[in-house]
Image 1: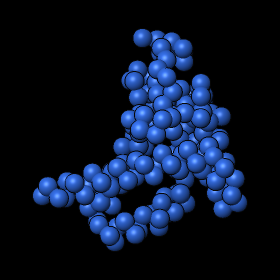
Image 2: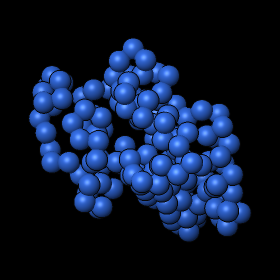
Image 3: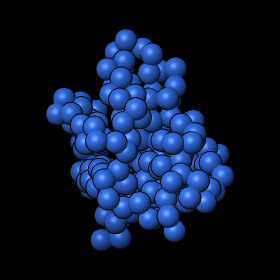
Image 4: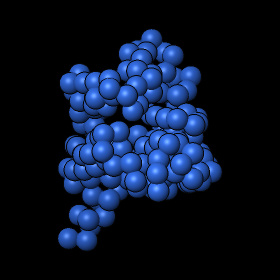
Length: 154
């Protein structure tokens, strides 16, 4: 049983790191300029242009074709370890839920502030999206800011 929990956590961690690397080096980096990746980068740019306005809901979710691509890319992990793959799948669920909450409802948590800094103050920091510890690990954590600096009341 413990090995299943460990595999699940490994899968979750792999997905967390892969998301961070994708966000940093594709959505905000040179790799996003490659022709095959431009469409993804363009959607992310639209998300950044509309983070908290009335158009934000159009650019929060991954389109259907993105889910198909994610599934195809994750197939090797599924075949290597279904439990590990479930951990990665769990990360995508946690990410989607928390990311939606950050943009639509929950403006009070420290994690929201971490994400809002990425959108409103410094887009070349805080790439992890929902797990600030990853930015601390990779040295891309923006220094703490007071919530009022990004327009939030305490």
